[in-house]
Image 1 (tube, rainbow, N blue to C red):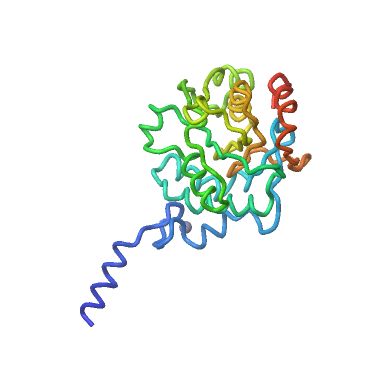
Image 2: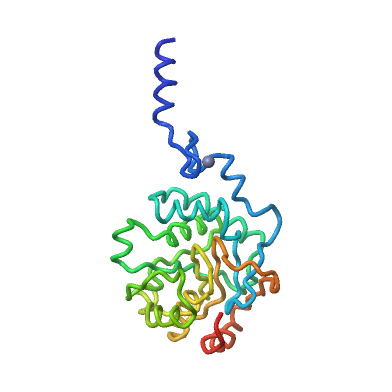
Length: 248
Ligand SMILES: [Zn+2]
């Protein structure tokens, strides 16, 4: 009896707390917060109206999902990437881009110095969980970030593009052996699309096909365009046009 009481007490102290509400929970997020950030069963989140690439996104960048992403990135909660990435993977399984071949999943990279400071790249952790769920192949070093960029938040479009100019270079996973399968970029948040556009342009420069982007959240909520399909061999022209198109 005494032993059982001590065990209960130990469980109480050892149990982690939900990073969003501080309730004790054995899971990375408590059931209440997890329920709050669900974008809604069997629904497609609104798609950005001017996405240069076909995009699949799980939820709107607001409310509990926004707080969960902030906890993941800025408050040292990398364990949140597993349930969030798996949820994104389940969404992909329900609403995939209609690629002809299975895409290679390439997370948007962080600059090595910034990743060293944070301790992880949240896009890579999300991609790992996404690939575990979907069975798609993860390519960690498909792209490398060679430039430390200032946060995009609050920058105008021109400043965003200048900030990201030459930010990415094809990484060691691809620069020796160009892949024959298309790339699916993965990032945590889609805002204006400038980041994925620049990343895709670098891959295209090497003749690598990019079929779309998958993100956990989208900050653009207009519902004027639903996601488009992604013919694996037809994206090259679309992407080429997109690199000189008006602001996203
Ligand atoms: Zn909670």
